[in-house]
Length: 461
Image (cartoon, rainbow, N blue to C red):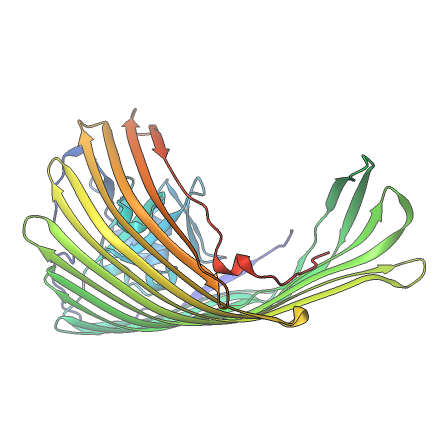
């Protein structure tokens, strides 16, 4: 795919009401064995790096994503075009705010002046879901006042990104809102394909597709309302109601198709559409106890309505006749409930994490062109324990054990039940400040989801 974007950026100033802040952490201060200190902006601890923004970086930033980009952290890339924060090696990354998992839109609603530090976790616990790294914004909550932010990016080819957010503070409570719209219209894309086939009787042939300009349209929107309560670092409660979606997504590929076993050229059109809406309610509670202990509980209830379609057609240039004309359409409604409870205890010698995750999903999928309607049910329970320990300044290891139980089915059929034990051993060796060696041994399971059991047939090309 090829496209060209020239963006003009504008940002409204951040008018702030009178703001009295407290300097207490929203998370307890925990001291593990430090490795070394590199200047005043980075503290390298055994399991994470503490990155403190400078006054200049804060002054030049309009939101939390902007701040991260201005801090120029070597391990991360910030993509303002696609609204993404990624690891430099394309590993999996979780973004958090005060220990709570958050989206990039939550980060864009952060006032940079309230960010005390950004923690980059290199030896993160299983409470984050087994990702490669974690970026955690440690943000202080003002006791009065508020702020309002608005910014936007616009290019001449109907590419734009617009954001608005605000927060009001009163005592230990904070009320906030966020809105985002990403305009993605008028893109042109194309592809060149070459496919090699071998038939059952040994014959070989090649199909070649020479790309012609097609259309790409992919707008999105996000909105949220939230309430948070912070009690001097002892208790944190966040309730967030959010809505996101993609209206009228269109991805179209057009080209000229030829093959090695016959003469002539065909005109091919491959078009996919998608439209979805996802409201969700997210509740998070964290209780910090004496002795460097924490208890976390997160419950998320969500709904999704989605329609998708796929069209594939070929037209013979010589005869003007359709050689193929395929069409598939799916309408689905999905409900989900996810609960995650974690306990964490820290010592100077290491960290113990234990937890349980439970998820339940209900789906209703209507395969319109196949005349099949599937209702799916799926549940999963994961119980785990993990121990992490540093040995000296350059070596640490992690041992974990988990049990995973799953049940999934299409209504009317017998359920499929599985239970698996999952073990992992990881170690990290710091050679110097620029080089690290990681070793990992783990077991894993890969089982289908309920949607994979459908009997609906879909011809793609």
